[in-house]
Amino acid sequence: MKPIALDAMGGDRAPQVTVEGALRAQRAGVPVLLVGDEARLRPLVREALPIHHAPDAIGMAEQATEVRKRRGSSIVVAMELLKRGEVSAVVSMGHTGAAMAAALFVLGRVKGVERPALLVEFPSQKGRTFLLDGGANADCRPAFLVQFAAMGLAYAEASGVKARVGLLSIGEEEGKGNALVLEAYPLLQEAFKERFYGNVEGRDIFLGTAEVVVTDGFTGNVVLKLAEGEAQVLFAWIKEALSQTLLARIGGLLARPALKRLYARVDPSSYGAMPLLGVEGAVFIGHGSADARAVENALKRAHALVGAGLLDRVRAAVQALHV
Image (cartoon, rainbow, N blue to C red; front, top):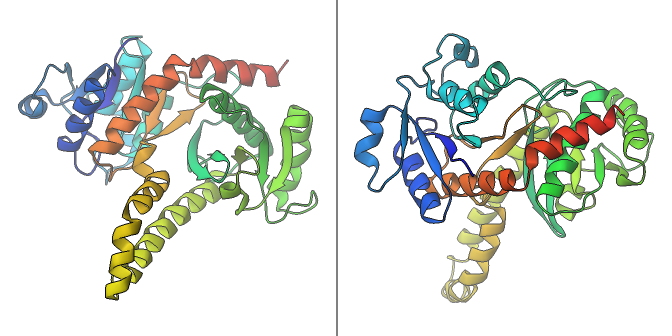
């Protein structure tokens, strides 16, 4: 497999954590190509790790539209490498909007996809739940949700998960929801037949009622940030409760291994990055606050999904909607 291009200048703590994550992934057998300012990257590379020079980088506080004018930025250069087939995927922990804009500007959309979507992965009681859209499209039309569902099913299959589609709403009954949900319901029902579960509520995401859940990007991003924030608060409360008395501290020491395993299940860095589905290339976008472990896991996930034929599966799933 060709290497994965890592936007080494993207992220709040780049390039230190991006280089460290790349080194870890390379030791695990993932081929990585660093894309960024070689003068800054070379002193950080302690082992043989190739670098493709990009003289510019788009900062987290800059506008996503800058990608059209700054062809030398690391994220645009990485996308151009993917477009030319020199790399198998692009991973970035940098500016989310810039990464999406660069993917659309350089790669374009898969035929039949009106809007690409970010897929968010949540742990559930039954395994994993995949939610689309995680924030790429604040406003959606009903047809977008059908395309999101097709791409989500393709991703689930590439991940080895047999999935059904649920439509996020305020109630399980068919007649509940806003205008978008009410219009999307019969379209999903017609497109996916028995693979369409129906409406699901927010709690169903963690119960695993349906493995693929579709919604607009505004709602999906709120769900994502709420879940991440709640997990952080809950663990802070647990830590506080286990430090209040001597008996609690002893219990905390005994429970520490189990708590570490639990935290690993809900830690966003264990997933690394979210795939941007619907563009003509394998693109993965992570948190700007990512640490080296998140970068490593993002690269590993990209490597595994490229090997599983993710892009071809997405193309086939979307094409099936138009047959």
